[in-house]
Image (cartoon, rainbow, N blue to C red; front, side):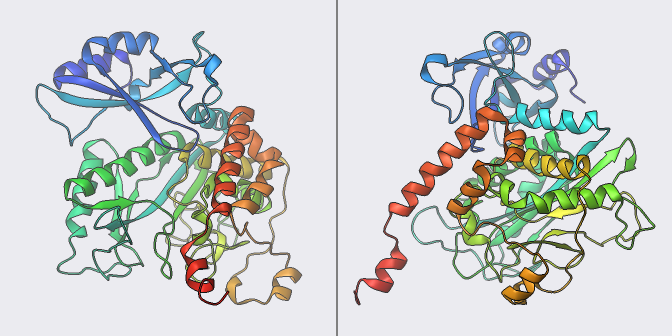
Length: 444
């Protein structure tokens, strides 16, 4: 049954014997928040929303303006397959966060993404994305990470317990209405990836939040731990969220031009130019943690430099060529994000940067098909190739004066987000880390 409105939700809840409904939303950092109502309160929630205290939610409201309202989006109704299915079934819906007067709350990341998508819509575009979220399975969340296997990219190992974990995760996602295209072992030991089917950015942001929870829930049911931490193990590949994207004008792919050697239209090239020009500024929204920058180092298939190419995985933007000449398949891949980001803010930032390129007619630089890691500093300078921020501190510096990122996040979220990241960076810098003790304690 396709859920379109409140009446459909009420019917589905009755048909599936739902007792509890969890109302989901995120704080500005992308942590999933939830509270449950009983089915008896569902109709009121759908019509009026449910009030709660927003002062304890990161980036929402000050204590003197704490009352906010969560109003569920009927189209996001889905049963939670890991909960009982009879007599006490549990469903969930994503919510818009509103002020008591019914106006949008400025700290709601989902609402902010909607605003950016409206900007694209006013220009005639629909924004589609397909993120590839990588993650690790460990024996537990305690102590040094203990992997489940020593497999590598696409490996199928006979005793790989994670094969069944991935299978169960895929089936659970599909049961919740989330299409899946691929699942496989990734490059690092105990690292995996499940790719969701390409769709519009708002639906996908909701799907990312659901995906992360499902992966963790299935792991816990098997006595294991799944993490989306970008770089949990030194010396191996970190986990990225390479995001494929395209703009469509109706049924037409605005990025496609069969006359171009890369099958890229002028709009597609301008979008790339926007991502490159503003890549440093928006990096904070795509790689938001101290640990994110342990991943963005040379040598581990993670981007470091602001360049683009077709096959080269050392570039920030890649134009995949799995199906050359096919209009529907023409897309860009932005490789900076990691799976611990807030997807609503990350998608908004990427889209805003690309639209800046289109609106202002940015010129796209030449592609760089050589391995940028192996170029000398002089070669990169000569070709005008800049690099992404080297750590969270540099990312904050690049972001805090950015009008593009402010536009993508809105004033409220932008200021709260920057404030939070400065606190994280200050606390991290004050710590004494194991590396320092191992290296210096015995010699200084």
